[in-house]
Image 1: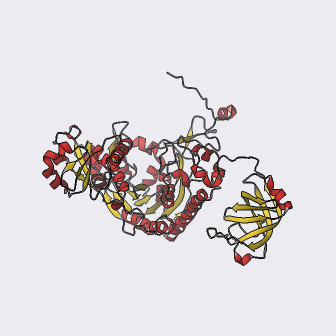
Image 2: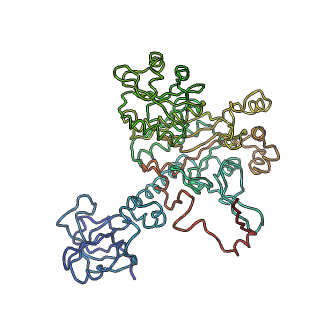
Image 3: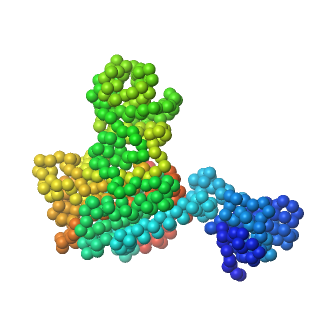
Length: 592
């Protein structure tokens, strides 16, 4: 059986009129308009072509076929009487002399209409992802992903980076998220881990004398799904540079990313170098987030001094943050809706009042603000027509809640958000340490292998109690675009002595470091170059470029929110024999 084709279904034009061609594709639609006349839409990866059936013989072949059957059509190209200017092939049609059924669809009804699959329930879409991907709109996101990855590879190679792959089976290490573990058959009771990131391997490459490394790296983390995070597996543009500092890393990405975003993005405007740099503490104080969307021109104002004593209970003894919105147009119902959304997302309440055109304080908590109107107007710089959104709580709570409110207000007010652009920024000077939410103890804030500002000296002062560890910052940085964190990076700690001191503060001694990170620790004792790197998330990058809200839209075969592959049935039970070979016994946990 010959399955060749002379042209694709998106290729034929008026230049091919009169030629005999062979096409192959999916039967998208059949429209019968007479006893021996029907119009067939044939679709392949590249587009669609109209095929006109004008004989009983051709009608008989297609008549009983279900949609999505695959066909080979040989026929003559002719000019259409009724042209379709919306289609690239809309000027022509093919009159077949032969039709061969290559693959019969045996289902009378599809789980969803192919061209409207995005309207279907997500469970159905993921279960029948191979059908969902036939939808040109869905397929185009995957094509975009391929083009972006190719462009990233070319750009990084042009910057002098070498693409080197690192192991998938490695050792478990404490890097912040849960590992996926793989039992070893040859070493009973021992496990490999899928890498959360190639962090240690890329640093070892620097210690090995490689100067510039990158790869489109798969990473595996057993964590919950979010709109911008896929459970299980994701990909990042992993890079590392020897004899480099923070400025070197910034310079590379500021050259690599803007042209790709401008070329492939939904918006064709992207920040140019140098990107805005914002210290972490300033970002939290000014924007209420360490991933601010700089397309929004609203900022936070501290209103604690003027409002904490106004008599409104939630403000008393707390930090109060205000967001002033000029020229605000919104109804009471819309304002209540915004505040409700803030509470759902942040778990904290938002409050408000308006300074109307008559110069009066109205709405929301106006009765508490009215008695101190003059002081509030002066402190917040209000002009008639302003809306004031407010949050309260301990400093970080007030900031984060205000950050959510800022985002909601920016999206609600078109005059305060320049939506159609990609706005990058660097968040710098992150805290080296933080108090863990679950443990209540000192933990690394970001990457444990980062170089602290102040080096060994500042760590020794912290160990001696002369410096609060929470005040130590590190050469750590995040790249943010339109309110989405694309990546974290850092100047690495390449000195074993500094490494030991840094881990000592989180209760890991020399023996712990040597046992948990033996290769890296030992490599650094042989003299390692200063090095720095970063790893922008490819999935998040493509999500932004495609203008999608969910990361699953740009992954070929994504899992659902519960980390299940509904199409393949993973995770699944395995044969007891396989467990025996791995020396594993599964015990059902009794319910209490």
